[in-house]
Image 1 (cartoon, rainbow, N blue to C red):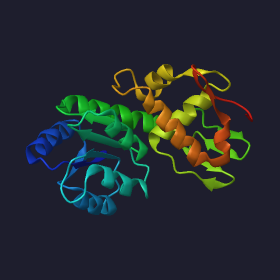
Image 2 (image 1 turned 30 degrees about the vertical axis):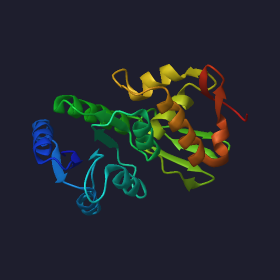
Image 3 (image 1 turned 120 degrees about the horizontal axis):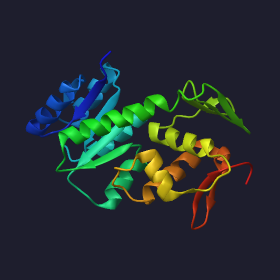
Length: 226
């Protein structure tokens, strides 16, 4: 079955250019020229991936990302001509999984989309076992996280990060290693990306976020009660 991608870009030529590359890789592409149209399409069709331009009329990419995250953990890639770190951090705060700056290569964008989908699909299929600590339960087979029996809605990247720390239980993971392992060696973000996601992950886990410890000047580790 073909994967479905929602491409939200107000530049018609850029949209057509990107669409052609995705179709060559056997994706079904749904196009929207602004956030309002994108949310309508998203409500009508189950998407596997969303690609959002930030600067758009009517409803910008940040606002669109926020609305999508209220109801879905679908992987999201944001694209923009702006390169400021604060813009990237805002995107991650809102739940984006990847951030690509213009000018961009459609071929590279498709490759990053495929890599993101592979991580999102495979992260919950390892071993088929259940990790439980305190009130936290992570089912690696069904890709679900629960705290005290209540489902915790994590983005694919937040889940990847949690699973990475669990799989290295008790070991201090340097932020550089986390960035390379979870985001990939070709990722151009900085170490604050890790800090931002750790903060969001802890907040979503509530009291069980205490299992993610900070090791000053070193990194993070997952362990028992801290």
